[in-house]
Image (cartoon, rainbow, N blue to C red; front, side, top):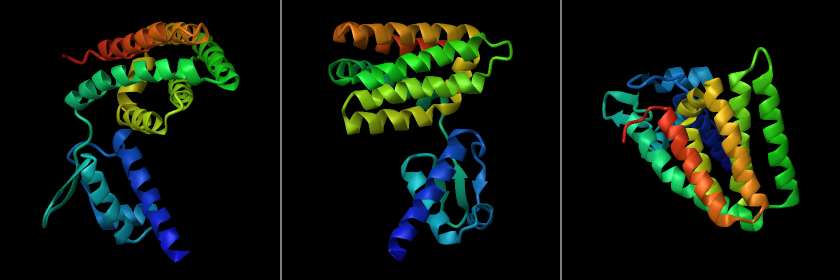
Length: 216
């Protein structure tokens, strides 16, 4: 039981640090001191040290012997590569979702789109809420693909470009277009047109990348 709790604690520390790096709480080149982070999270240095090693494997942290651990973060080149790869995988995901999606998932996607339009039309439109709903739409599609591997890979990519994604849907004009693109993807899935769903999902991600002005 104690070993399980240790693993659980290490996992929580890792997830928290990764979330803070990807959301910009920790800046690029910022040092992550084991003692300071441990005190902030209320844990000992051991789970922090292990989380930093895991983050180094993901390329989010660089550990320099006898100096410390420094945030590497996600570069513009990383974001560009992720979007290119993601566009292909999102297309395949939409194709598979066309084959496996349930009525409950279709209903949930429709509700997400209705909520997205509702929040966007409000006088004090909340970009954060629209971004959350955008992420939820994609998450349901990942689940609908009926592939644990697809869901895992795309969910991780989604986390890696979290800040860029928020910036993209933060623009009302882009958010409106994004919702329309989501509608078209959903319509293709409902019509069981796997080719069109794949094409539209691929194009949707490339449009997001273009909106971020990420150079090829």
